[in-house]
Amino acid sequence: MSIQTRRERERAERERLIVTAARELAEAEGWDAVTTRRLAERVEYSQPVLYSHFAGKDAIMAAVAVEGFAELAGELAAARAAAGAAGALAAVSEAYTAFAQRRPALYDAMFSQAVALPFATDEAPAPLRAGFSELVEAVRPHAGSADPAQLTEVYWAALHGLVTLTRAGRLLRPAHDARLALLLARFTRAPG
Amino acid sequence: MSIQTRRERERAERERLIVTAARELAEAEGWDAVTTRRLAERVEYSQPVLYSHFAGKDAIMAAVAVEGFAELAGELAAARAAAGAAGALAAVSEAYTAFAQRRPALYDAMFSQAVALPFATDEAPAPLRAGFSELVEAVRPHAGSADPAQLTEVYWAALHGLVTLTRAGRLLRPAHDARLALLLARFTRAPG
DNA sequence: ACTCCGTTTCTAGCGCTGCTAGGTACAAGA
DNA sequence: TCTTGTACCTAGCAGCGCTAGAAACGGAGT
Image (cartoon, rainbow over all chains, first blue to last red):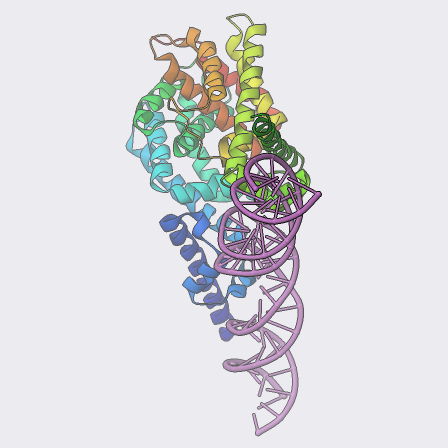
């Protein structure tokens, strides 16, 4: 029993090591630089060991993505808590776009790369639902007669669009704050 | 002179052939299936010929993307022309998201893949600026005191976010129309 | 008509990718 | 001490984007 548990613990630790190494490598050099060979070298095991933990590179990226969702949820919650109910949406929006800019590789894993994560269903990982619900609470006061969750989806899409188009060079960074202010102005007034 | 021009014409035709083949392959099987080998086989030339026309695979995708922008611009213009000034924004929004759903591979080339295209500058290809200006004209009546171009960037980002999150399974397709209606409601009222 | 030369095009191959089959070495139990 | 099962690594597959060097082609000059 004890030997078994020790092995399981060591295994879990190694899995953490792999995910952390993948994340660090991605944040330092981008996901293109995260190859299974470099990753294996970094955790000081051979390549096939990765496949005894994860089904493939995508699964490793998905694990990093879940970490990212947890961090994002935390930062959104902190931003909302620090702001009053009136300024919650502005604070959360700022926190969201700041996260995407500060952790581009993480944001990529969460949205551009790992397609396999269940999302708009009950099977979605908890950190993921937590982050969304932070957004919902910030949007709710401005929902008027609309469904808060659905309006949040729209608002989230707008934030995500701003983030991705800016990252891709489609929108120029200097005007980011002005754009965010325009978006806020359109959502902090409840119609009908 | 005549020989020279014939050669240039043939060369241009072959370049068109490559771009068309890349687009068809991408639309049929996705960009992952578009490898230089398959593409070369399809145009019935050897692989290196591609590199005498384009700097690399990215440049081929960029050429496809420009085609996509031209088509999108055309469809947006048609939608705006068919609608009255009042319904222009709704019509253009619908046309935009419909285009993204009907031509996913094209949309990918335009926004997810070809990073190298100049965009928010004067060097941006004409079809690209044409599409954006269609959006601007649709947004302008609702801009109020805001800069129409900047507000358009925000609206475009929202559309793009809806499209990409839906495509990635982050938003469920059935509620798309409802989300689009919510977005419209927030932008068809000029604040201040 | 024949040779020459420049261009065009192809064959072959480099270094890399994600992933896996097969064998080795180690550690636990009898 | 020997056996058995597990953990791990070496080596390799098929495919990727891209390129160097050779071959074949077509027009020009004698």
